[in-house]
Length: 385
Ligand code: GLT
Ligand code: MN
Ligand code: MN
Ligand code: MN
Image 1 (spheres, rainbow, N blue to C red):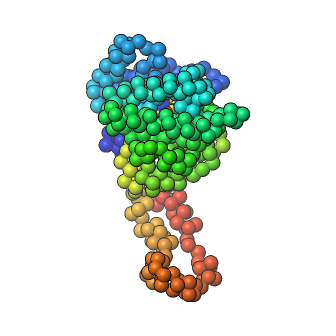
Image 2: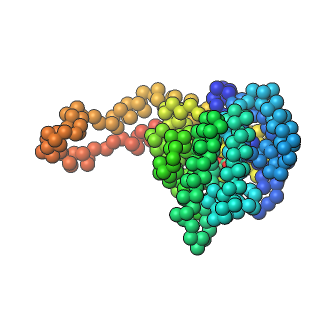
Image 3: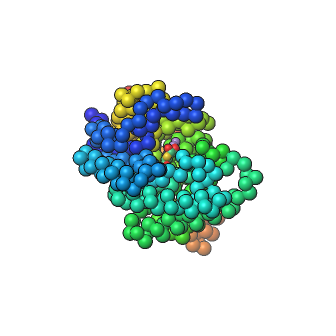
């Protein structure tokens, strides 16, 4: 069956199953769940871990003793139920102080406060055992570029991330940092809007080896991009440090739908890519139950995310063992030993390649068989093979 176990490394954020259904037009439709209760329920469902923002657990105005009591209770629940906290992050978007950005605010006091808040949150994450630290720059952006700060904002962003990487190393936390891109929402335009932008920016940091990406299905899809391609590029760069799984219709507000709820075929190729690549990090669901749902619907949502992943993993296994699919795949690729030599660069090979004759018309006539390969995939996904 498709019942998850901790070995599958499924994680949820406290903010995901804890989502109460509030949206810009309406109030909560569900009661808040306490963190220890979420830990217990996720463990019962077979999850591996739970991730959090500082303020998902500790309210922003908690006193030090309140903080300690909350953290102690949470750690007790984690050890009672055998859940881990692989990833932590900072809420730099809810408080009005961050309304025009945190690390990229034009107000130096806000930037310093963002550093202070993040260091405290990194301390909390380290105390809970987190090894991955996510930066989702929800408020890092603009609505109006009359702000005139585009180049400064990138420099401030860089200085903030460099500072926090130094802090982590100094404290011996050993964090790997994962930048999470998103094109818009809540800002009109968010800085570093796509996986490609984040990968480019990382190479301008002082310690690029400490930074990777946390791509989210919904976010690349909102940008009209192919999420599976984005993840492949992150893997190729050695930068897939974490991943946010969910689903999304293109050109909509951020929906954070149950994994596989909308783009089942893309979800299949994503699972196949992750499994084939040897990615061994957490499979984190950054999604929430529909606003229509009660608490039972929340757990149906969480179970559904994990079951769909496992079913697609099984389909990926079938795909790689299906003789007809493998034959079509083998026929799709054409290798040529003589050309393999000529395309290894040397002066002579280059000269020989320039002199070589190609049957251009024949190359253009060849049908690679992708229609059949894709149809076989669809039939496999529909359970009819
Ligand atoms: C927020 C956002 C997510 C990010 C989280 C990390 S919080 O819910 O929409 O995509 O991953 O800060
Ligand atoms: Mn999202
Ligand atoms: Mn989100
Ligand atoms: Mn996310």
